[in-house]
Length: 269
Image (cartoon, rainbow, N blue to C red; front, side, top):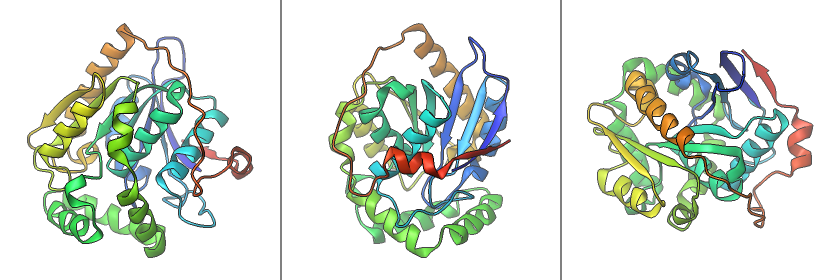
């Protein structure tokens, strides 16, 4: 697994941020936010297996498989508890991680989390994505096209199918880490009704809406999102939660810890 690494040297009092990209994307579109967060702590932006500059596994991974890969990467680099921030499918991965590996998280920021139960089909999600494209900065088009090309159609399609099949509604009530949900007010992929439903299901969750933002809030509104994250981080620091990892059955699409270590994730800063 490739990762971009920015920020001040880890020390007591310096938070660790891990940013998790959405479907087909990579660390690249998180860099505007990462550079701003790097003024406040150590920032890691990994490319999930099959995406960006990370190696491709033998088959596209399910959501639990991606969460297992991320958990193994966090363990290998001795990161955590960290504040995990995910956009879109990245938020889905963090949800699964928070349920099964809560000790790895100091908190979770779910930005534009998918998938809205009212649009659980490839056609519906594709139409919403097309509607969102025109609301994003044009510079994001080129990043997205390059990342989609690098991931490949097969990986994109199978990962989307895994995302649509992921039982998000079952997982949300089991999230025990401090959680902030963020929605862009102009986001057609994550409507207001869905984000409010998700916030109600997660115990003690906070919800924030940025009226002028679209789906990729981390790219189109990085300053506003960083302000929200820093405020939330202050709340988390003032009321830490003690959690235990849950020994749940691994998903057939996941990767074993031995395979994860064999991949030897590397950092590029």
